[in-house]
Image (cartoon, rainbow over all chains, first blue to last red; front, side, top):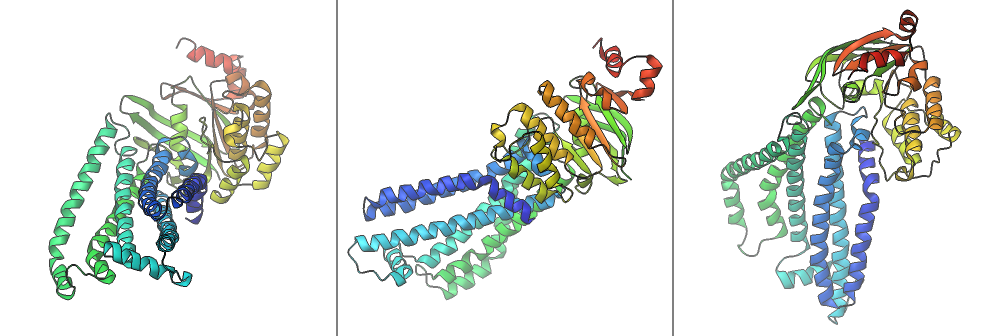
Length: 259
Length: 232
């Protein structure tokens, strides 16, 4: 498993490095535009990293299934389950790494914004400064951002596993029939429809839970912990979805694949 | 004991049948030639045995085990396509094999590549077709395993590189190993073959001992090949 994850990163480290160097260069450029440039950078880099992450994770798996280089991976004596779990873990590690890097950019740019506004800055308290800035400007702090990023990451992983499953179905169950690609897209839509049904049911079941949270939190002034409690059920759904779909993809890779 | 048994194997795609009830028994200590024109099912058969394609019906037993990820450890497959990661250097490919296959002989591969002058620090994307073919052959045969499947190892390779590849294959022969080579370049390869399988339109047309048939018909394998496939 560790070898599989290692080679996921070895295969993409040059691309990831190039993206990060480009983002760093963009940051340096926008820093010359003052506090506004830093704010713009934080928005643009978040969008760029998000799009890159999504495309990269999906393309890696698509290449393994659809290009001849996929033989390198699928000829190895690793089960389909192991391969798909390694891919998912690599995706989680990459996502967490990009979130961490984005946080470093927030800290650097936050400090720069504070300085450029003429405030005194205590570098040992950069986090608090950024926190105050975010709190004052947007009404939330770094804790909220962290919880939201975890929720977004969980959503992304669930979404990616849905896409992985659809692609795996295309190369297994529908590999020997005409319009297999169309069928797998329909399957992708069906999976999403089923998942939304399950999510709705789950939400109904969890209504008393939300009521209990509302009872203890003040509307409009929720803490990061409160936000985490509110998002916990949906994050759980995403995680269960990722586990079930990854298991199913592993089964197909093991028993039905046609590369 | 190395053994490969293929029984009533059929592989269908949505618009064609690639293999039709193929039954074959491969024994250790022999080099087999899997011969037939393009589209006869050679590559499909190898891919099924290598676990890259799933058969529609029938079964394959490798060392008495049905096909699974476990049987991949008994099979070293060299696809005819360029399947190597193009961004990797040659040495990275060797490291990949060393990490993924317990039976990979890293030093053996290093020595072979050194002997045939394939540079370790070259990127795969910069290798010539001959160098790529040599590299593919070396890494496939550097695994110390039971069954080797070499799909068109001489394709797109010049005469000198062909000799090198044939030497590497001959060196890899062992009493407990099965080597299966698919090709349509029969004359180049027939001297190393013990047994020959002719595949025609996905079915086994002939399965024979190369030397016996040569003596019986007073013809080379290539001659027999032309006789069987000449009118196609």
